[in-house]
Image (cartoon, rainbow, N blue to C red; front, side, top):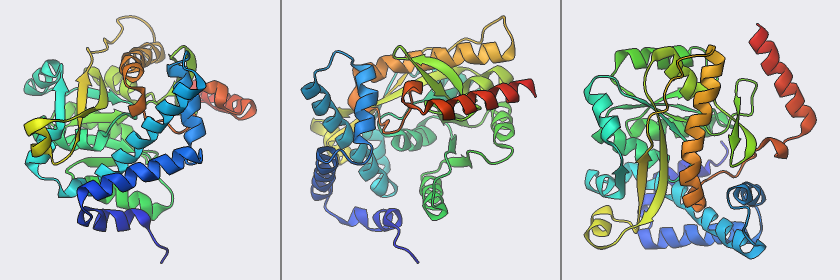
Length: 318
């Protein structure tokens, strides 16, 4: 059997002294950044859309901070199943959570639309303990054994996971909105398939997942854009957290379902609404936007994207 570094890390990372582990991750991030490996070049292409006025030196400094944030997320994920309840509570701070708590209290948990910011796994386990059980959809990774490791990891955290691309995923999400017991959290700021929808993202065209908006339109459930970024901890909170880092989870106002227009038009309008809200937080904390993949249309191969648009057109005509 081939060596699985993810399985090894989940089993053994917690045994390494925390300061040494964090230092090793920072070093690995710096080396990856220095070699411009591991998607660093694409990260910089994406970041320059967020902060177009950056000089080359400023962009390099920001991408270095971004790689440290990205590796921090993985490091925290590897040891999260060993974190205590006290540590989890101390590591998370909620902002503007009144609307979310009110909806849960009414038996109508909202749909949360997220981007790849901060530590979404930590946010999920916190929410499942303090707000409502979390249901989410995970992209199917390759090889399959790595995907199964991620499923097992998130299952241990108390999250219910559906695999993107499996049949019946949307129907299951719809059933969950009607049952009113789970908080649906969807990472949706990248979908280059024919099922995605085009939006303006930092003034550039990108393609995001239709899931959050489509589910809201179909169910009537509230759609709340949810941003995550890191913050440095101090004093008693840092001691309780067992870490120098925590996350801030910011809930933006509900994206209203349009009163007029076709279903597709409503989905497009709402998708633009939630991505615009999250863009504001990403612009404030770009180092915590872990987007090392192509997300903007202008970075894609024109011929392949033309095929994607043709497939989307055929889907709409079907």
